[in-house]
Length: 219
Image (tube, rainbow, N blue to C red; front, side):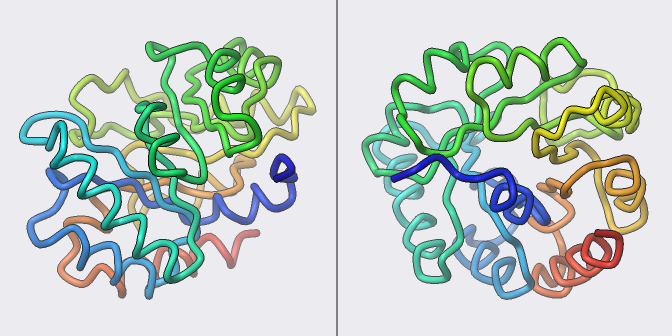
């Protein structure tokens, strides 16, 4: 398998849904199925934080959600847990700045998709040097979903990266909703990443469709 091209990665980032069991009020499998029907383009399994599954329960949920993604041909990314990603043959891994180095992870996962969270220009440039396929930049707006989230910084970093002529695929993350998604794309982002905007929506299909429409109109 070859490394994903930047063009393909840009398209996959349009509506990037991240979720774990503790982000949902109903069955996560139902939420994911509905979100895919609404138009998400990429899914990240992030089973972290208060009330999250661990051990065999985490692995089982990962496999269930992965099966749904496979059914719809949506790539399945695992947050942080490289061993789990390799064990179930996930499509990729997303890591933060406090996780293993991107260079190490790239060596372990081969040509699978590698995403890296970045909060400034230096971290974006290091992610590129280490072999990242995309950067998740944020938090754009304040968020309560991630318990250890840094201070919101708006779209300034995305603008700074693009001003430097860097064409790495970028997805904005953190507190993004239908009301505030547009500036992320207008600043140079290739897509938006959301958790609660879809996972806690009364109708995940409708919400995903609405978010996807906003992104598509601006690209």
